Length: 225
Image 1 (cartoon, rainbow, N blue to C red):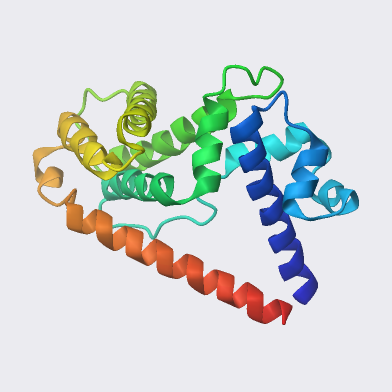
Image 2 (cartoon, helix red, strand yellow; image 1 turned 180 degrees about the vertical axis):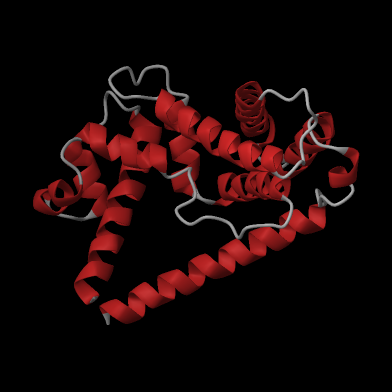
């Protein structure tokens, strides 16, 4: 158990170090040696988790996806709203998630599959919409894939604009504006009345996520001890 906890921490240290190196040097110019030096791990430790620099980059790209699902909600569209709020929070405070998004937008990173995170987000949103349709939450004209791609693309746009304009300080507000504009165009009026797109909801999700991360990190530390 202690060995597993150390392995999790080592992998996280490698990803965080790689995120910093990629952000500063760009993917193509970054080297394994620089990542090793920053992470403070051996080459063997890195290659235990990742077979190549490309695999490290794919691990960084995957960091923007939640490693644990959000609790299921009685109204499925609430889960889409909650994911938007939570990603805003993570983009504002988690350097690894910030680096993941930056790497996905790095046009110079020609040797990695930068489309993967976009495709993963579209698939996740489409899954939510599929369940929402089965529950009768969507208007009849809604095309699931078109809507999933629109939502994912629009979110990518607002987070990029927020990052450039104000270092993402207003991203939660921009997320609320996006949700309040898009959601009424796809859901039934009765469902719309049940959805919570408030700033208070966003703050509550952020607090719960932070508390969960702190608890998980403490558990790993205790296990290692």
